[in-house]
Length: 254
Length: 202
Image (cartoon, rainbow over all chains, first blue to last red; front, side, top):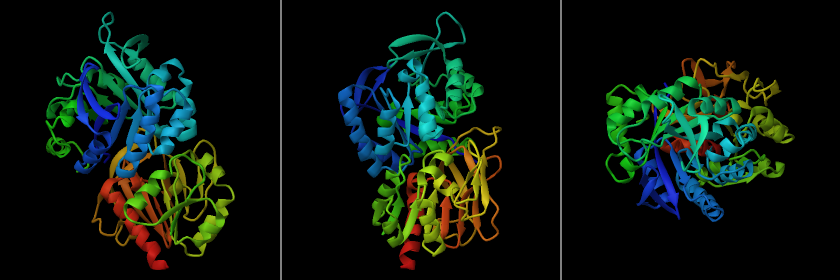
């Protein structure tokens, strides 16, 4: 049986891992390569590196980072943040990334998903969606772009369905309302998207306790759970998370 | 020296990184002469089948000849799928035909792609799994899979709502649908086992 995945996320700024609350107030959490290697040793199933500066200058740094990670880490990893075209995706994959996540560019030019999926295979293409609960439409979420700073008219569930059709192989779904709060994932959101698509959904934003992981998998129907704060600052080890989930009947790679 | 076939299809670097990490000498090449001299060949692949097999071009014959002459060959992911007779991924394409069977889509009743770590149960005496016990988790990322129809081949399967072929072994021809270079310590052990197979032969 396919196991549920535990995925630590490393937000990278100026070659350091940082973590904030609701996308703000960044706190230093260490060296990205070292931290990635440590998580891999501890039994993480996968890693996500997000370049949160995503400037022209940081692009070169992130390619170098990907090369270093690929030499040391022998589990899959995704790279995202500010990716604008298929050429950049190609560069990151060639540098050693297994998957590339696309967010703002996919909203602006949806063909980037199709183009990348056709060239590199859809398993390489992750559609990252930053979702915010709609203030006007109850039970709906709106897609936000540019690191969450710019709301769009797109409905999250509709966009996820379209993303799958365009060729995305996976959805990285971040709740902006829950991100960094440690109050639990937005499982209504996770379930709404998981029910609507037939590709894996990674739940992101809000992990604070072990039971939150279980809830995202069972109530949110997530295929994988992503977390940052609770692993970076030593609250829970990866193994501890997996033992907990296994104890509650979830298949994990342990 | 193990040669990883370089035919310009995305990420082949990680396979080389993993072999170097376990202390094996490895070279990335598309030169028939280098391929002929290799102790073993690795055919990686991150791409659609049709694209990969056309990118392979004339190298297909070189690889087939080497495998027929007994050189150890390891196909990974789409490289694994290419070992078979044919694939039905976006059209009908001929494979290398080293192992009988065909590549078809994972049924839409399952989440597609099959992405993540799944438990593989090898048959006894499958060389790639030496030292790994009865079952191990490996990392998969694919939307098509091989239906093995070769009596001379040993196969390992994983459960994805149906028996999905995860690995084959037929004489000196080996393949894994999963990515050993991305499957942590268990995956590195598979590559070590392949490196040993290559060493023994020389």
